Length: 233
Image (cartoon, rainbow, N blue to C red; front, side, top):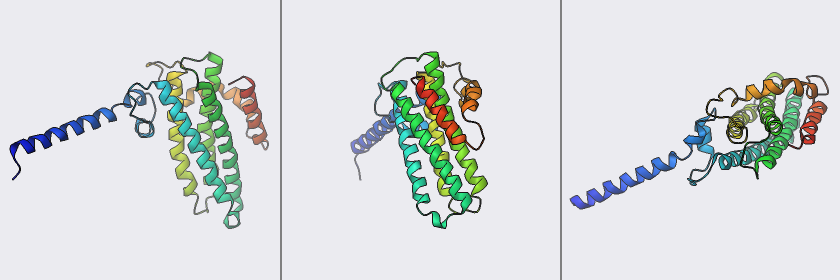
């Protein structure tokens, strides 16, 4: 039978393990509370560095978003490589998703270049343009999902595309919220400005000028990307 001291030691060890686990788990909620998906934020960000700032977490989230967007683009390539088994509607939807995924990677890469060496609120123009790009990424993924559901309804494997991009969109939302909190100057009372819809409304006129819904939407979106890059984002 175990001695009293042994039992006490085991209880003490269990207590410290629980205390350590609790402290580690509490490392990110302070920053994740500013995001629309705190659980996704907490699961995505490292929690080992207690001195990390919103800028550190923001950069990490954007890097992870770049990785997710690249992985998704590669996944589309995998499906398109076996296009003989796809319907015409599925191929067109996947090609649109492929293009939009490429734009997302470019937007995220441009965003990371902007924030990589900066730990302060950006100028209004640079901040709003970057927020617009991050909001456009959310719209691009939703456009991809809508296209698949509308044009590839009979494609039995479409959930293999839709499920990952829905999860990715939550990560992109986290990146947008962390950007807003760190570089966008959104304070505790800026709940509206922390939403992608706010910035999308602010820039909707300019975006529609370059990205209408006509037959040339791909070239128009390219003009929009060039427009943002011209402004040195």
